Length: 239
Image (tube, rainbow, N blue to C red; front, top):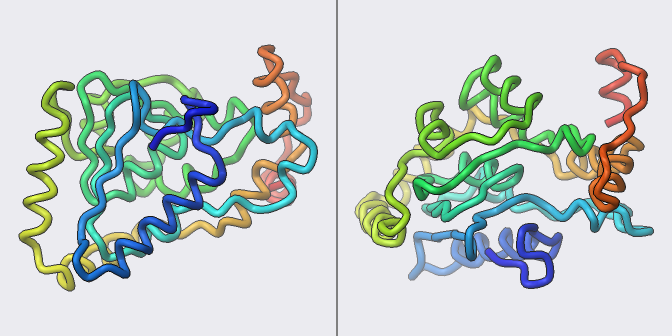
């Protein structure tokens, strides 16, 4: 994964392309393992907030790869070479094996942009428990690969210089498993992770609060939030 125009972000076209790549591997009988990594010191750092400040940018829902990743039977390895946040964390959890460099850092900053991020609220409690999920999402703090491992967000941490070799060994191990049995095991395991509709993700980035968050990010200033604290019914209606 690499975006030459905005190196630390993932464009909508890249999200859609990743989903199509998974489907392409599914359709090829000679392929059964997909390895995804980033470029430079970034794995996946989420979408581009600045893109959502442009006129008409939020008119259509983003075609995200996560529903496809949730149900695919192929083996997917996330090789986390560096900074991993927002949708990068979602990808790491939904991958079959996530192996991270000991230099990697993780973060869930969506709420600081005013974005409810339905995939975060679906995935995190199912994987790390509700209390830890709230702490990570509501504080948006950065945490290390070792901490991500200890809470079960990823499966392995290796020295940075050994990351590529570790990924190759993991891929070889996965190829030893029966593909039908592997797909059935994954389908059963992923039943514990709620599936999120892309439309709810699109709705979460079209709120007035998200617009202020994206605009503040682009203008390099703190966001100015409304003092209103909506109740649960209001929050659900807004999103």
